[in-house]
Image (cartoon, rainbow, N blue to C red; front, side, top):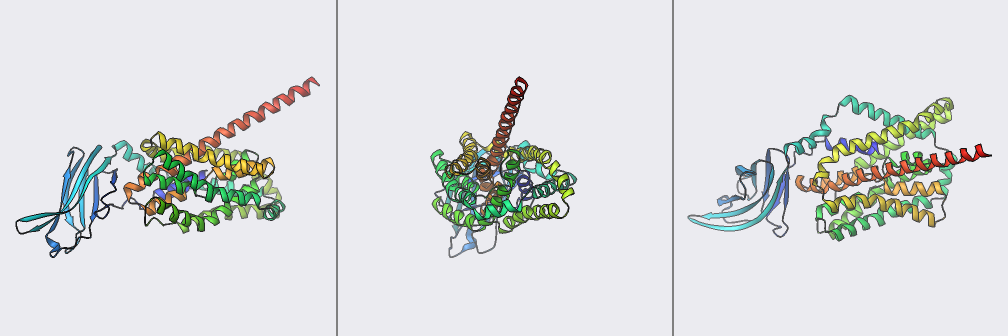
Length: 434
């Protein structure tokens, strides 16, 4: 869970904020929604209009509420083209604007193209500060947490039994069930539920991409805390992350076409590979430590549970801190879907494994791996595929699912601990009575 949140943090502090919002006269039917978070914003307007005298064309911007938006200047990108850059001053609030492309021939002016009622929302300063919040985290704090994550993964590697790993490879049914749910059933459910709830196309794509993500880094941590099969959980996470290199591009292509979003076909291959290495490298070190120095492995195994629990709480808190601004943008439908996505993953995973006559620890593990999704990969795809305004809108999905899945798993953990304590107290009473 925390590994996922940390990687989301690294993604947010990369220079993606400098991208400009784009509008095009080519798509007049779909009303754009621009989301601004800074006091000075830039919009680039593109057109394929080609007149005899391209230099005679100019852009006119109508503002519905000058208290929210003010035009600083409108400049042509290059001479002889019909691409323009609009510089705006923004103030908190919501308004609409209309953009018109005119062609002047002498005293005669002709309206060539028009984009009407472009919705604009300007976030308040408090909301703006939340976008920057992840960037104010101390570098030393992040390094300390990163070291804790690596130590935790190394300790988990000490708990892996090679015989169990070989058995899992020989009986791959749980891994196949998990992959089928993650890459086929979950994306379809995300798409279907988004259509039923009538979510905008950008948010629908965000939920579909979140649903098609592989198992998250917190899966094997919760498998340990909930007495599942840790070895199987690590194997499932590594397998699904490897399959994501193929399945995420396919699902991105398929569902972007179904939603009418041509061109959305960007998959962060480097981030997927780095995630795989981030999991495998420290765990492999833990396996080596266990076989060469068993005494040190025992010491690491003692700290893995409290360390995992600590990182789980820290990860949820960090996810809430980063996702708070997106929660303010979310409506009840988005929150409902954010709760349903991980819940359906848990339900599908447990049910299919149970029907396949798998042992209880395996059923728990498959459920956790299908419900705990690596949402930061969906966030990476969204940032690569959309303009800034639509990226903010679509990013509601992965953040909401990440926060909801963390809270649901924490609730399951508390229920599990409560039941276990109740069983122990009952057995103690029976022993005393005997």
